Image 1 (tube, each protein chain N blue to C red):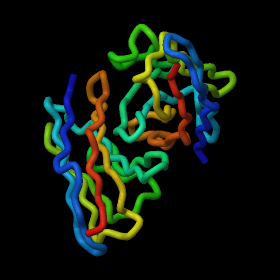
Image 2 (cartoon, rainbow over the protein chains, first blue to last red):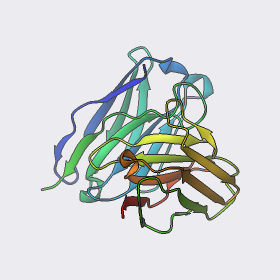
Image 3 (tube, rainbow over the protein chains, first blue to last red):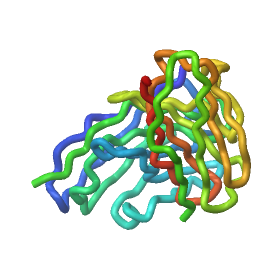
Length: 121
Length: 107
């Protein structure tokens, strides 16, 4: 069974940094492309970024609002996905979800339960 | 960036109705489109990928169609547990983009 479990988020001051992680199990993590998606309070879903599998290059793509401030990384030895957030702004407040890929692999289409990140002074 | 539009933003329906939810892309995205269901306070759930393929475990009353720029999610014989918000996502071109969602509520 595919499982994705995000770490606890937290309250951060504007300009601060935070790392959230996502522990994966139940599938071949090293071959999976992985995503971060966020949802501001009362708003819709917003794609944050994606990281490719190592065999497919291991690079990442990020949405414009977070490019230069957020990075995505993975540790295939630990089945862990990370979202490193810096220069946080109040508009980054929301629930952050990790997910597997969007394609047709058996492990694609699954989401974690989400973690709340609040950016406020 | 590719813009995804979903109109209407909400619709009312009754149990047993057939509901169609449209999604339009601002550019050709071939069939790189997914549909997601989200209930209040819950994690989104993928229903459809590649525009028309049913996610494993999803009831067959859900179906997707379309390609290029016009897509539709159809729910046949709406059930009480189907009242939720539905989002489309294009994953043909970076940055990937979600539609704003269509909320299906009880008439």
